[in-house]
Length: 211
Image 1 (cartoon, rainbow, N blue to C red):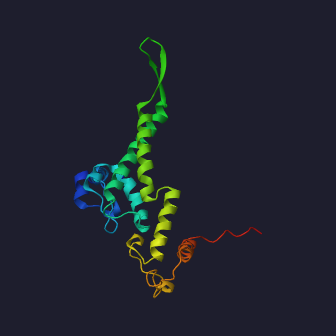
Image 2 (cartoon, helix red, strand yellow):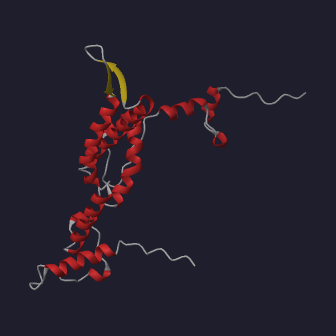
């Protein structure tokens, strides 16, 4: 009976590389243990200390591209958002502990009476939630805060394309339009209509009726 080819050792596989897009066990282990890579988007660069937390890097990589696309993050706010990513990981860990152990646990009072005490992990979740309530509106991570930021961006766009809009060039219909300073007879109602018109451009088409 003809025997098959003797398989290469792990050292031989590593020396050959990855023929046929196969990876040796050593290479796979190096990939698994390699430090995570936090992506940079434009001028938004993650702080170096973020790479020490693999799960926080995953949160960063998932959300930052969308924030940068909507002009909700820049190089100055990358540090606070990196801390937000770390706290998200902490909240998830505390939530998992509460799921397993419950929000309350049995304890004994000073006089020997049975008590119910709040789990420390549940207290940690509450502390993280307070931080989220403070920072999430700054990045438009809640619907009400997102709408307010869009409204402010629309106002900046209609009043001279301020840096809040991210330096985007005005549309063809806006080129050559006189600013509020060049029009002495400008009225607040007219400015309000311009802002509402820009916001209306973000609306999606209504769903069609079923036959």
